[in-house]
Length: 229
Ligand code: OAD
Image 1 (tube, helix red, strand yellow):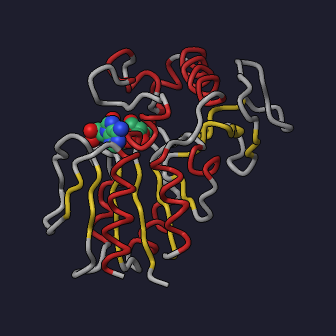
Image 2 (cartoon, rainbow, N blue to C red):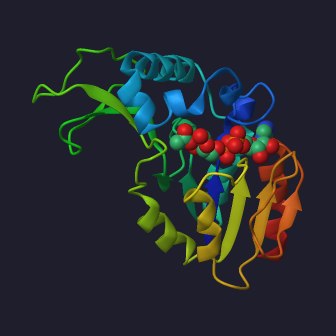
């Protein structure tokens, strides 16, 4: 089976009612990214940061995967599909995808600030100041913030470097190192990009642009890939 590697961003979850970050009406219009999504912001105001992620978690509880997520599951019948997502939601999991790497962490998990190895699945519950790990350290969202390393990047780069086909769905490709994954795709590998809006792509490569929302776009991708198969 050919290896189909898919890099997803917040756009794939937009049709499930979750906001993207940089579109009009996106999350970074109402919040200062550096206050709620950076390690410095966490040190400045932990309560604000916890509240921001508590809200995101509560919203996620009622979100369901859309045709974009489920279309990627259907592709597993024909391809060895690997999803590398920048999303912290769990909609790829809820849809049933098998291989998922979360580059930026996961909303439904928290971890100890004193011991990185203590990671807890809290589902959709809130955490507040004073909630601690078993060693007594404060719990924080299990999210990769600006100013922090991206531990899953090496594994993601390995997978990208073995792709036979690559697809990019619903990401502005602005945030690094995630956007740099493109550079690991071997020469000659077809690259598809699904996004209803123009993406200022850093790719110096030929790409096949499917100018659609993820739900419809993944259906078109499937048709194109199955014809070529
Ligand atoms: P952005 O908000 O930067 O980009 C969202 C992309 O999705 C844009 O290119 C939109 O055009 C596209 N889009 C909107 N609706 C869509 C739809 N229905 N179907 C397909 N595409 C659609 O979000 P990301 O690229 O995901 O990191 O942002 C990357 C990272 O920046 C996030 O993981 C987050 C953020 O700061 C952290 O917080 C660490």
